[in-house]
Amino acid sequence: MAKRGVFGGSFNPVHVGHLLVAESVREAAGLDEVVFVPASRPWMKPAPALAPASDRWAMVQLAIGQNERFSASRVDLDRDGPSYAVDTIRDLVRESGDEYFFIMGADALTALPEWHEAEELLRLCRVVAVERPGWDGAAALAGVERALPGATNRICVVSSVLVDVSSSDLRRRIKDGRSIKYRVPPAVEEYIAERGLYR
Image 1 (cartoon, helix red, strand yellow):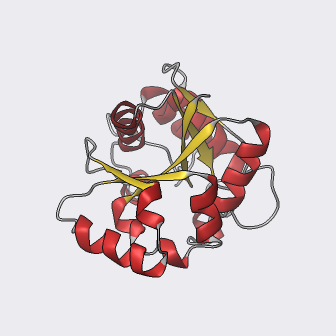
Image 2 (cartoon, one colour):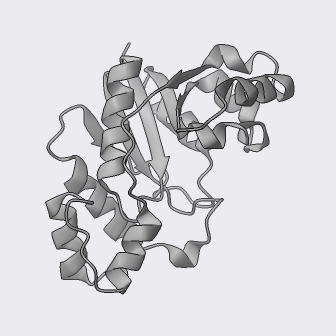
C-alpha cells in the first residue's frame, strides 16, 4: 500500500515555496508520492480572486513535471461545489486503497475542529502539519485533542524548509510590474507572462 500525501490549495499561482514544502514533507513523513490538488472553490477564499481553474491546473502541471514523486489530481476541479478536504480525501480513497496523509500548515491546525466533517477527515486519513516559526505546537495539539478526542493519534508534525514566498505577494508583484523570477519555476513564470495572468 502506497503512502500518498495530499497537498491541496488554490495554487494561485503555485510557487517554489509549495514545491519545497511538498518535497520536505514527502521526505520527513516517508511518503511515496505527493498529490497536488488544486481547489475549484476553496471555502475559505473568495472565488473572484482566483485565476481560472484551467490556468491554475496548467501551472501546477508545469511546476511538478520534473519530480517523479509529484503528481496532480483534478478531483476537486471536476466536482461541483466548494472544495472541502474531507470530500477530496473521500474521492481519492475511492480511487485507490492507498494510505493518505493530508498536508496542512501548522497554523491551520488550531482551526481543524471547525473544518467540515473534521472527525470523518481524521478517520479517512492522517494529517501532516507543517511546523511554522514561532508556532506553539503543544498548545495547538492540546486544543485539537480537547475538541476532537483521539485526534492527536492521527496527526504528525514535521519541519520543513520555509521560503518567504506567498501567492498573494506574487499577484501584487505581477500587478505592479515587478519580477517574480526565482519565486516560481521558470515554466510557470513564462506561462503567467504569456497568458497575462494577475495583471
